[in-house]
Image 1: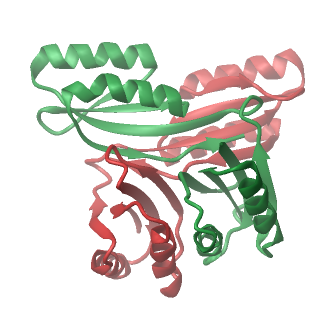
Image 2: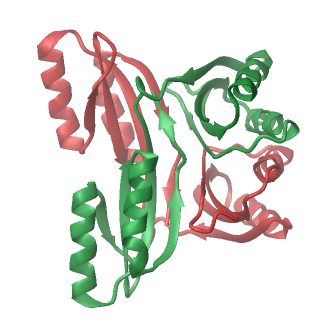
Length: 155
Length: 155
């Protein structure tokens, strides 16, 4: 099962190291991670998505909670949270007809289009992981030259 | 100076640990980090923003490049790249007049508004770090109850 963990930590060097090491030591894969400083720059919030059994997830939450530098560890409910990811795709675009078609797809998904280097467009999409997946499938035939994604963040 | 590093790595447990450890060992702070799997799930791309002198940044790029699991390390040019961050803010909203004002601000910045728990709204904004900062300042008087951000991603 998929889980979204929201972890409030002290913003000091080494904390990301400790948290990722905890996952590593348990041979637990991190699906996506995002880290940002909070309003009070003494703190950061990490959002980690991972996949495991109910028992494994409960265990990792407990272990994270025990760490000295973690202030709060929450497992977010998929139904009651806002969870989104930002993805950038560099898409191959041969001429105007490609560009028009890509723009149409982008409109449908609420993606923004930026001009890329010659022969490419950059699509910027903030959405849920499933919608991003669907958009990706639709643009794949044009050729995805490069991509970058943030990992999920959630409240 | 501010630097955006784009690092393509093999997607295996422990790699995030190694990269963050490299920064830690040099007492180099990570401003924001985002990690996402790529089209080919064998690879991940990390985007790290950091602040340092020209020399320090050149050194960290060189060290990252030397690591076995890094496939490509690029320092992105601020002027020629698309770099964006996604932020969620939970904003206190006392009644309709607050809610109208917040929605107006959100429109100006291209933020989406979601219903939060009673007495709050969630604003979702994908933008550049400076515009996010400006929006944050404007909504601060209402009361920011919580926030979550992804860190910058870039192409």
